[in-house]
Length: 278
Image 1 (cartoon, rainbow, N blue to C red):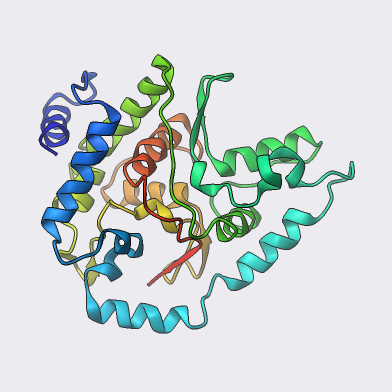
Image 2 (cartoon, helix red, strand yellow):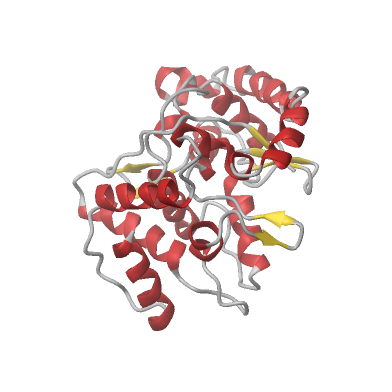
């Protein structure tokens, strides 16, 4: 964690000046996860997929009551129907994904050596549509969140297994995401890590900050604030705006690289999506 925190300070002081990382991604991940084990020694490793509900018994009890009748069930059902409805050319989403798109969420995002970019599952849903003569969907909510929710549902229990291939472009994408995570931004001069590495478990107004470990496992998510499903990039945009920083477009290179780093940090945990958050 020392390497990561050193970078966080350096980026905060130097703005957008590129920082050369000393640790490998695997070392980063081990230090990142060890930080949370030390910070929350009574939380079992596998329970971090439950976010703030792993930290606060009262909030967990309220959340478990909601999970008795999960609000994302409708989205999963809608997503399954959309996933299996043929396009105008007769093909379905299954034709675009390995294993027919079932049980594959744990491998996303991944670095595509052919295109030289990070691919998320939502990006590939739209690429599939365009490939088959359909118009792309919006990336933050609606049908794409439902399709992603269904694909995530079929992957529940599978272990997150994001890989950084031996390709300098992949490492550059990873480092870009890492820099975003630790860089101070906005009028409040805060980073992702300020909330989710330094202060998880603390209150911000009436909300408890969640740990960064396991955070991506439950997306897309139904949030009570939204009253509908939203993708991870919708949440990234909201976080940027909360610190009064300009947000990036969903599925921008900036957010895809951030998701690459962010998810890699949770390798070894189970997919728990779609999720619900109060």
